[in-house]
Length: 189
Image (cartoon, rainbow, N blue to C red; front, side):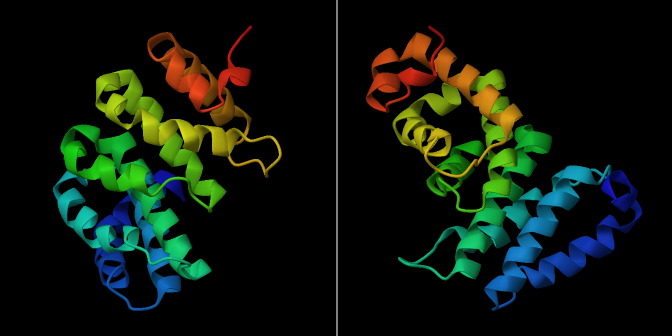
């Protein structure tokens, strides 16, 4: 539906708010995913809701060791929702509080949610690269993980190409870190 969802934004937000407080992780996972898509596609200004949405998504990022697949999916979908929030409303988000939790959720198991997560990272890098620099040691192994050719494709061609360009830019500033993460094979010759 994309932008056609706009007339239903308020009623959907109310439903999703209740669903994000459910006890079943399958419901939480679907609600987090739907919230992200609503944020991405509604043309309504949702900036006034962001603080509340971040609060109700936060518990999904706290997962126990060996979580169920539904619990893991809920976390990954919450990360995708936050990625979509950053893409659309970065200036309204307390990134100093959100980034440690958001980046701590990586790498994701749900590869579809990698797309909004990485788009958010690229946008942050373009608008305020210094914001991500303290997280390089955390991010570079994630980049190596998602680019690993022995695993399943986690990014798609477009995001992979952007990530490789991103790594090349990072290598200009921190070549030792890029090398330590095993990312030199992805750099242009």
